[in-house]
Length: 235
Length: 92
Image (cartoon, rainbow over all chains, first blue to last red; front, side, top):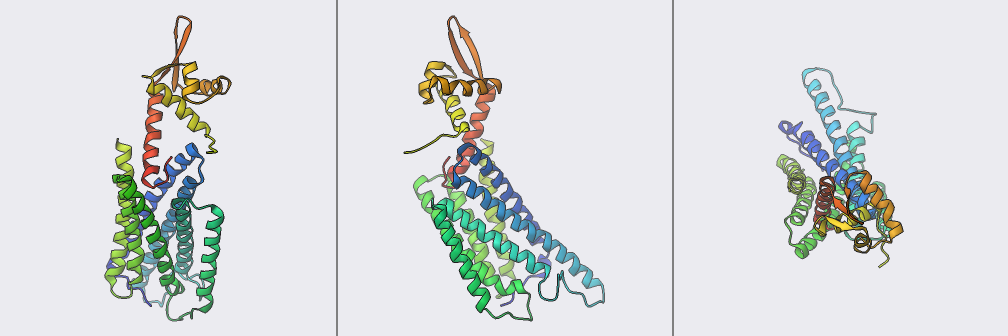
């Protein structure tokens, strides 16, 4: 299936990715400090999770800006130009999206490991199962030549990420029901918005608004996390 | 429970025990409130004194340890980090 991206939204998505990356780096920094006090693995998992997620967003933002600049040049030139292509098959966007897919899934595995208080050996099995699942997709899915490689895998990534994020959100809502604190509610709601980001992406073939809604959901999710941190720091 | 405190946790426990005693405590009381032996406590006290988190106050034969502004600020920072980790369901 294809992804409909409105041309007027070009650049906004990169800015949104940059904001999310900044918030992610901030949370990674705080969890690194927390880990330096506790030395508990669950804290380092969240630290690394946010770090990987932020690097993924940063890669998407940089590639996005590069692609839009190339696209703008293409509009003014009469040459038949190809957007950010590395070679005939594997484009720059493919490269960055695959990196982002891998980094995000790794981050979500780390979050699940931390939130379920799972032993890392079980997380390793989860990781192995995911690798098997990805190999199955890559082996049996037909590659469409008329669309970019990353778009072919886009739905599978967002479906996998959505399932993982729903689980993470659920765990955080259960925790909120025990704690009844505004901060834990903020975290649960923000993870739900990140789940919506993946859900809207799955329907990005329906309308151009799905792509916009997906990015707005992602931004809201990370802004809620930022507000929570600022509220704590202001005390 | 088999639980081993990190160095930073021990510093926090010492500072908290002094703070809870109105900011002023004798070494013997710190020993049992922070759950340490006399010999183990000394290097931690030396570190906290050198960093300016604690100060010594002599009163006759007795020596008291007082928590400083810097020590209180450090405890405040730790409490904020605790709130953030609590929000994620992974308490510090």
